[in-house]
Every structure is written in C-alpha cells, then in structure tokens.
Length: 201
Image 1 (cartoon, one colour):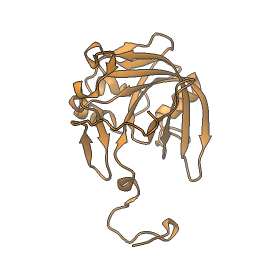
Image 2: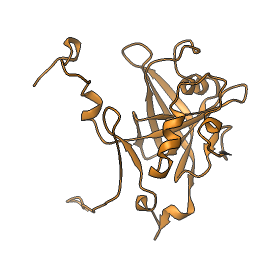
Image 3: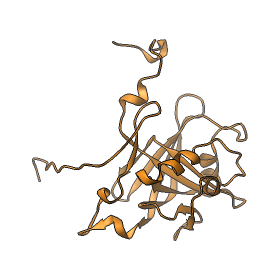
C-alpha cells in the first residue's frame, strides 16, 4: 500500500510509529522551579553526537494544566537541565505508571514507587537504580511542525552507570535487558546480542 499522511492511511491504527522500531525509551526526569520532581517516558529519543556527547527527545502534545507543552518541556524551559534515565525490562511497570497524565504538582517518582537520587552536576533528580543516567544541560528546543511538537536537545555533562552493568570494561546491556518501544502498545526487551564488524574496522 501507499498513502499520503495528509490524506490518512485508512487502517484501524496509525502505522507510523510501528514502522520506526524498536525505539529506545528516554525516561526523562526534571524538577520545576518550585522543587516538584517530574518523570516521564519518551520513545522519540536517541543519542545524536559523540563530542561533546548529546542526546535528544521529542515531546508531542500538551497537558491541560500547561500552556503549550507537557511537564518535562515546561520544567526544562524553566531550569535548563534534565536527566535521561535508561529503562530496563525490570522497571517496565514503574515506567508505565510514570506515563500517567497527572497534575503538574504531582511527583511521578512517588506515584510510580521509585526512589530518586540527586544528580551530581545539575539540580535535578534521577532514577536511583537505573542502569545508566545522563545528566544534561539544555542546548536548544526546536519548534517542529504541528501543534505542540518540540525537539529538546541537551549536552551530557555527567554519566551514572550502575556498577553491575559494567563487564570487562564495557557497558553490558545483557546485564539488565533494555526495554524498547514498538508500535501501538507493544514493547520488546533486548535479550540477545551479536557482533558485526564494519568493513573498515
């Protein structure tokens, strides 16, 4: 089949996000100017540069109690910082609970039963037992086409790695099995790895 997005796809569910899979999940933690912690999962997330290390996530839509965004974007605008926490399969239920649309004054860490820890270089909470967390300083927020679509870019200024995720000098994802987003309400966990060397290696 072929369809133009502006004309609609005629299917019972939108195939767009199901085609771009699997997607890593950035569990974005922030704190507003009043000290209220926020945590939410974003599957439009990835690393985008090595030197300096940089990441991005995209937020779509808005909440009723925010002017034109979700809590994460609003807090980042106020403070200029955020933390990206990596989601493991074992934290699936907590991640899902943190996606609940709650009031901006509600702490999602408490709602999801998660322990927070303070970041080292920025005034922001992180998920204490996450396999890894990136402390980030905002570099830019890009307004995308459409209502309330925003791309948030940040430079990684601090990295936390859980000790049991290091093996032989490498960050080993088999120790925790990353959780990834597929389409619709489908997810997957990374269980098996294989090595593929590039021709120029």
